[in-house]
Length: 238
Ligand SMILES: *[C@@H]1O[C@H](CO)[C@@H](O)[C@H](O)[C@H]1NC(C)=O
Image (cartoon, rainbow, N blue to C red):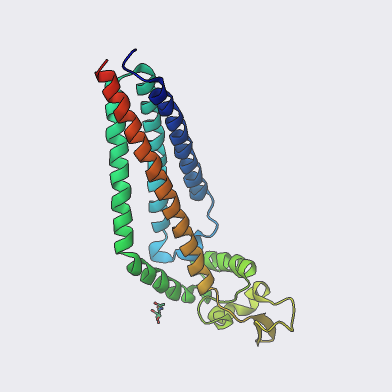
């Protein structure tokens, strides 16, 4: 036992416990998003309705991989198995590499994805005056959004609703008729501001949170790489 420091071993235990917690949280959040459909309709029109699921499926895979890896690292440390520690190191390294690649791709296509979001929102104006089930789902989602963020319509204001305005005017209505952020429209007093800037801000906030989590995770991963490497070498020199 002389070659293996208890400190590194316990660091590995603690690290893998934290890592396992990360994995299970990611998995839980991903499954929660997959199951609840709230807000997804806002960003998905006919042709892109499957796209949010791709991101969520990737999250589920990442969460599951992290859980398996943390188990491998834990067992490797307990049994002082170089083979397991080696697999753990390689797996963790690959994840870190993928994360860096995703970050670079994301940074490179940032303006493009902003344009896609903008175009999607402009395209979805048509859904507000539509009557099919796809349009209805989008209308329901926007209605909730309007109520929450005190906005009306998607891009141009209440007129985006077209013939559907009267049946959805309730969520646009201003409670206070003297409010300067409200206008008169088809006999109703409604919020002047369209929802597009709120939706864009919401997406931006989500992206910033994702970036923060990715950096935190990368830091933890680098610690794991160092611990497993040190333990691997200590076992070898025993
Ligand atoms: C969003 O798209 C619309 C229509 O495609 C375009 O007129 C508008 O300039 C775009 N806005 C931004 C901020 O890119």
